[in-house]
Image (tube, rainbow, N blue to C red; front, side, top):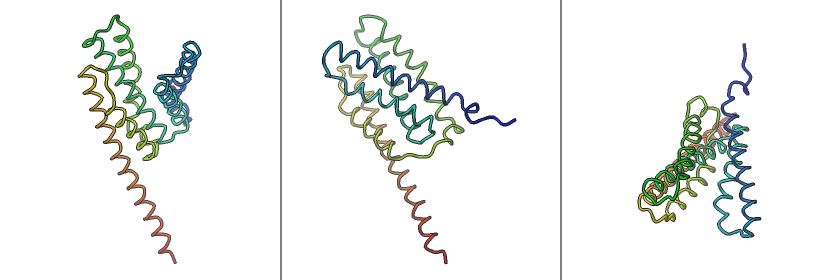
Length: 194
C-alpha cells in the first residue's frame, strides 16, 4: 500500500500549521496593541518574529530549504526565549509565575519541533538554502551582540547566541561555495561535450 506524501509527513504539515497560526496570532496581537496604545514604538522585533513564523510555515508546506531554515531558527529562538524566561524567573526578580509558565511552554512546544526538523529523513526533504542561512545568521549575530537585559547570565547567553550566528554565517558561506562548485562542474561538463 502506497502512502501519499501528505499522510507520510503529517507531522511536518502540523508543524507548518502551528507556525502559520503562531504568526497570524502574533500579528493579530500586535495590531491590537498598536490600536489600543496608539503607538508603534517597540513593534519591530515582534513584527520580524511574526513574519518569520509565517515564512517558516509557508516554506515547510512548500518543502523549501529556506522554510526549514526559518522554522529551525524561529523555533530555536522560542527555545532560547523560554530559557530566558526561566532564567528571569529563577535569577531575576519576576513578580509572578508567568515567566516560568511561558518558559516551560516554549520548551515543550518548540523544543520537539526543533529536534523533529533535524531528523535525517525530514532533513533530506529539503534542499540547502545558503541565502536564508546567511540572513538568519546575520540577524542572530547582530541581535546577540547588541542585546542588553541587565542580567549578566542572560546577556552572556545572548553573546553566545551571537557566536552561533557567526557560525551560521560560516556555514552559509560553505554551502554557497559548495553550490558554486556544483555549478562550475556542470558548466565545465557541458563545455566539454562534442
